[in-house]
Amino acid sequence: MARTEQPRSPGFGEFIYDKLFHNYIWQSIFRSGYPNTPRNQMLAIATSVFLHLHPTRIHKTHVKITHTYCLGGLSFFMFLGLTVTGVMLMFYYVPSVDRAYTDIAALETNVQFGMLIRNLHRWMAHGMVLTVLLHMMRVFYMGAYKPPREFNWVVGVILLVLTLLLSFAGYLLPWDQLALWAITVGTNIAGSAPVLGGESRFVLIGGFEVGPNALIRFYTLHVIALPLLAAIFMSVHFWRIRRDGGLARPL
Amino acid sequence: MAVATQGAGATRESVRQKREREQELLVWPDLVFIEFIAAVLFTLTFVILSTFINAPLLNIANSNITPNPSKAPWYFMNLQELLLHMDAGLAGVIVPTVLLIGLMVIPYVDRSNDGQGGWFATPNAIRITVFSLVWASVWTVWLILWDNSSHARIYERLPMLWGSDTRWEWPGHKGALFFEDWPGGNFLRVIWDFVFLDNRIAIRDNWQWSMPVPFQPGSGTDGHLDWPRDFKEVPLPLNGTWIWNWGDPGWMPGWLRRLYPYDGHLDIPAITAEYVVPIIVMVGLPALMIWVLMKLGWAHTVRDAMIALFTGFILVYFALTIVGVAFRGKGQNLVPFWKVPNLENNPSIQRYAPPPETPLVFADRGRGAEGHG
Image 1 (tube, one colour):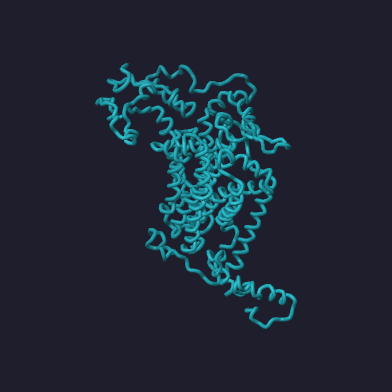
Image 2 (cartoon, rainbow over the protein chains, first blue to last red):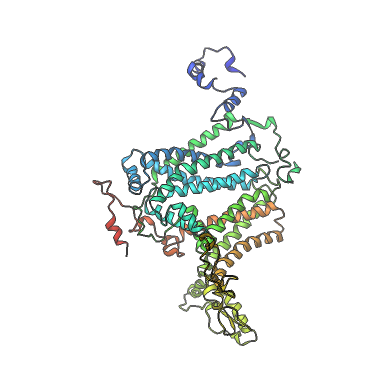
């Protein structure tokens, strides 16, 4: 099995392999060659800061696409994609009433791939709302919220709310008619709450109508407060999957 | 693992599944490669999508020009649709709050391990799901049409089906009816009018009845209790103006003043139309569905009830979204989807297309002024 430990044959493939994986720089980063023994494959997962969220071994039913359709993973993938494109958009966008709209328009016309980045950000945001909803449906119809995973379902519902709020907060930022009136309608819904409706709407948009204060509040919520909260709850969500024994499967 | 039906916590360890080493795969390469391929596929899909479909950007925000209709983002259109059918506080805050709490408590209500880890793994799961889908869609569509008075309008136009020019009269609109002279005929007429109501608001505005009473508290002294007239200003107990009179409690701090209903009155017909009827529908129809499922012998366990309720919730969530996005035109009127205005074609808010030589001029104040009228 331990092929790398055997004396090397003089073949060209072995020569390339050796040069690629047994050089000083590669080994300083990854410590070992390409993981081609079970032990090294487990180590590749367990010792990687990016991959160690995974267990080193999983049940064979869990790699069937139809078991999960990757929906939770895709939601996380969308979140990562939105973070990357969102950071790029932040380079060009100033959240003031004077500049927001012209910045977006300039992004579309004056920036290389600006339109593509904005499109990616928008469609991934819609995609994330969809995958999160579908993920919830998958978990429900599979009974995957059952013991011992009750609390992770609750965390999931919180993440659903955060996803909707993230998308909603981002909706205002282009500062066009679509944004202004969608947020006006949306915050009016929040303002219709009994007793403290008016107050909560005032706090949300920083005034009595959607204006400069609302823009800076939604921007701050959208780029730091809500993503941070979502990241915290996501960490708990993923951690609990491991602690609760991995994905659900028939008892 | 039969012990798992007991409460959470006590059996925490026992419900963790034993793992057979020979049924396991290594995460590297069997899982991480699937994840990698999925990430590549979806990156490509979104890049292609984003290459061909542009994100919308309409004219610059202008609080003086209100687009008609104004719509929330699509995932909140279901709430906006609910707003048309009940009080705003109920639709926009109370219902979503109750639903979110309801979602969160699902695992604490359904604590069994029946059907865990497999798609629709309990015996009747699929037929309960299908039943709930049909039940919820039929009722949702019917209720939206009913609140739009569509049932009466369709009935009136039925003769058009066979080419006749006459119009039938909706039974709820008829003048005197033959049974009104019978003993108890007036009561029958009240029932008749209720059955053939135009819509929900008609309970408040158009439904009328009168009942002789020996004495009358509050408004009116004609010896009759009339719906809706005598129910519109029902004083709250201890409101400071009814029975015991005391002045406006200006000494109260503002927050307490807001909570105390000084001179408070209830508009019972409005509360009926805006709260009571919607709540009865929203609680009663799911309850009726569970009862029917139990009578059919399909639903036996808490999990079965949860499947029915969750499916109904998902169906209503998406059905209201579709109606809100695709079937609400100007003034939020119910229209066919081809008559819903496309915002990008609306001259008051359409996207300003800059001429090529001045790409960054967005002078639209003159155009905006046209929209004021």
